[in-house]
Length: 304
Ligand code: CP
Ligand code: NVA
Image: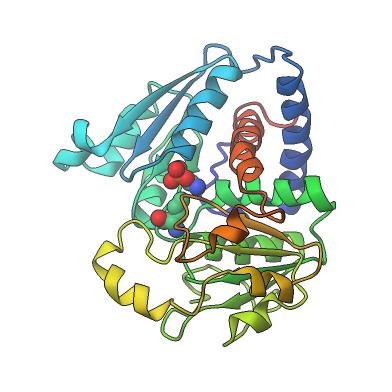
């Protein structure tokens, strides 16, 4: 079988994405009814982290165990990667000792170079440019609550970061719309987002306008990992881009609120929203586990 990587959202076709959502639903229901499902017995996942993580590490590690396999955690600080071993050499070695690799790193170029030298599938666990596993979980959560995402409207309020870029790619793959509102100077860069066109997103200077007509309002931290030096400036620039109760009122009546987490209450989101009745952030976080199990099953075993 040809090796398939998941380095950005559009590495999978629409049909493959829909297969993964269907499998995630089945895998979740098996798990919830305590049914053992071990299709990846004797398989090993290596997880390489160059940035901090709670959810990504937990969901991949627990997910691999639940599928019958094992997971090994490596971080830059205590592996040779942190001492300058070329990423190409690391890929050669790591992929001879494992069946699957997940990487969280800085530039997308690093994960592309790793994948080009890997004998096993590589999954993007977040780069500066993309966070495809997060959007798999977010869309799966939306589908669970509201049915197919096709034709729906997602409002993205805040930074045009890795999570935003991935929403924009997903909109092209699954035919929905994204309303984006960023402060001036932080606009979407279509090339960085690797978009084919402008058909599935619209930009709004005023975040309240972006929220109008949205089925889902979502945001993320104002300062992503790797951009900490810009924090003070960003706090000033993003001050009017908080998702608060008024913004949720501007959205559709039954709109959901999501956040990939970790969140900063009082910055990108008001406590009354993230802790309020429209928020599905805990389910969203849990669904990382179920969709990534479906993703790992697909990359290693193909369609089941
Ligand atoms: N949402 C997300 O990827 O969380 P972590 O940084 O905790 O992995
Ligand atoms: N945009 C955030 C997401 C964290 C899960 C970051 O890159 O830090």
